Amino acid sequence: MVKICCIGAGYVGGPTMAVIALKCPSIEVAVVDISKSRIAAWNSDQLPIYEPGLDDVVKQCRGKNLFFSSDVEKHVYEADIVFVSVNTPTKTQGLGAGKAADLTYWESAARMIADVSKSDKIVVEKSTVPVKTAEAIEKILTHNSNGIKFQILSNPEFLAEGTAIKDLFNPDRVLIGGRETPEGEKAIQALKGVYAQWVPEERILTTNLWSAELSKLAANAFLAQRISSVNAMSALCEATGADVTQVSFAVGTDTRIGPKFLNASVGFGGSCFQKDILNLVYICECNGLPEVAEYWKQVIKINDYQKSRFVNRVVSSMFNTVATKKIAILGFAFKKDTGDTRETPAIDVCKGLLGDKAFLSIYDPQVTEDQIQRDLWMNKFDWDHPIHLQPTSPTTEKKVSVVWDAYEAAKDADGVCILTEWDEFKNLDYQRIFDNMRKPAFVFDGRNVVNADKLREIGFIVYSIGKPLDAWLKDMPAIA
Image (cartoon, rainbow, N blue to C red):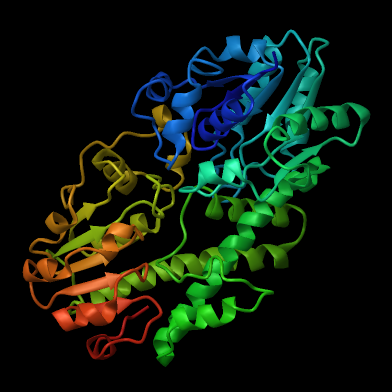
């Protein structure tokens, strides 16, 4: 029986291995992590991450050919194929601080693999890593190999949170990069054989190592670029009276462009987009390509501008101050159908409002109070370290309350900010919300989910990203 071990039981490792176990009943899959609490959660009825369909997949396989364990070395020792899906946070100090990936966890995983291995292994990069990481890992393994042969493959993940299980069941493509040697080719075919049990062969692409590593960064950079492009247009739409929804629809009907990732919003989030672009910027700078680096930096600059523009709009609309005012925050996750808050635009919006001394009442159907408080207290990039190494919040933020109901969040509030496009926010009883708010009552829709005209009929002053401004907002322009 082929044995697969995945180091790292996070958003990538857990779902990916669960689907491999489901689709390949003849393969034994072990997911290992040094965090005992995380492993305990994977072995419980309350999984550590929320992802539609994940529960069913795990329950079908767990205890049969899918195992979650904190005995890392045992399972690495037994495995034929070792996936490495550990954190690769952005460095916060030293060379490349603020841009380069910190490969500390990757390096320690590689050294541990070399130490415990007694048989040849295929080591697969599953984390998002900078180009040429495989080469560094290969050197560590080779210099500590004790005669064992290792083949390094790059198999980047292209999952979208909220649809990860669907993406794994029916991927656009599976990308496998390896050395262009007979041994490398053999390793590629071995991993290809795993995916081929449910993925059509024409969708399994094989490349050299560097192309696979760079393809992942490039894909995320291209997607983020589309979001920043439409968000840049949203600012122009507000200035000219155009409607960004109509503009993006017109643009998206061009088959060369297509309609995806053209929804204007308060900004992009998630664990990969910003991190991967910063990584790309650093690689370009290291390779003497400052013009290319500057080009990609603009994608992040527009994203930051969109968040600060939203905060400025809220403050300027409410008589240029939100001090001591209650603002309801609907949605904290970076997008709907996930509980993930990594790099969510809600963090910067909330911090901006707190900086102006607002009181916040936050509701998100999938994010815990502990997570929200930690996100608002943590420094930038802290989130990307294993949870047991993250700093703990010394006190909860006194100006923030977390509630489990949108109506409670909005009660006695001066304004409502919609920061995640959860479906339930489209169908709230906004008349009830209006009746229980202070007047004038504001709605700032950062995801364009509400019917602004209907809300105006109720009596709200409404701001929708990239939509024509109503008279009140025109009279109180946002100062960037």
